[in-house]
Length: 212
Image (tube, rainbow, N blue to C red):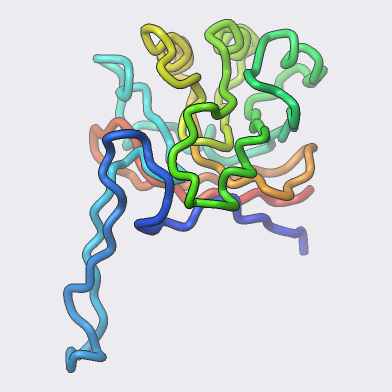
């Protein structure tokens, strides 16, 4: 059986979150320890918390929501690229990957993955992300899905949210908050299953990579 890697962050109140966002809350509604007939919990979270998917509606006023994200984009062959020394992802770096024609899904592992080893650092504004020019490169190459190992594919405080607007405006699916620690670069099968939330701009997801 092919090895499967779970690259999803575990949701908890300790998880680093975007500035001014509320942390996820898992609150018990009923407890067997307190005499209840079962255990039951309530979950409250921002849909862009932890490992999640962005729908076009996140930055495109008339873009579609999570319930219309094509499933054929979320599941299929992908390439995982590793840029351990990068401070940002540029078109030249992406050119250097020599991606095969027809590549539709690209995941980016950077030094960001190391941030997940210590939640005590909190949010890290120095995370690695794509430049707006790299976003245009993705669109021009016909890539339909991009994933990255921090909470945004876009640099912190990017003017005009240019990278998001370029990618989501072209209906490129974004998978953010991946945990790619220890995952070797190369080809995989991506299986990404976000919650099917009606007309919503994003959704938490369970994401796994299956080795070929």
